[in-house]
Length: 151
Image (cartoon, rainbow, N blue to C red):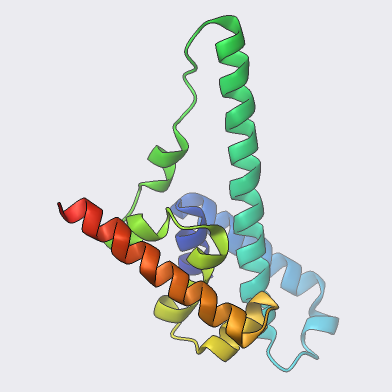
């Protein structure tokens, strides 16, 4: 769960917190979750949703802080979102973190968790064709990003 959350949110410490929160939710709801065919899929979905929500919230807070600092005519000392996300092990995972949230999640589930598109669709609550489309779009975008970085 930590590795999955890290791909989506980009920060190891935050990913650890998100994974712990997802596990806590599973524990709190275990009576219901344990009856699912695939409780692990539920846990992955909760982890992804928490990571996406956290990233959106951070983006909104950063935008607000930047507006406030520009209203005052001063530069903000807030961290750059790209700098937080850029804490990657490799150029590929750096590029993955630039993708939209669902595409990041699909890449993480497919390559890191080694899941099929059917399993990914189940985790994300979408059709197999939608999961396949997200994966295809993510691969195309990654190719573009990585080729731009190579030149």
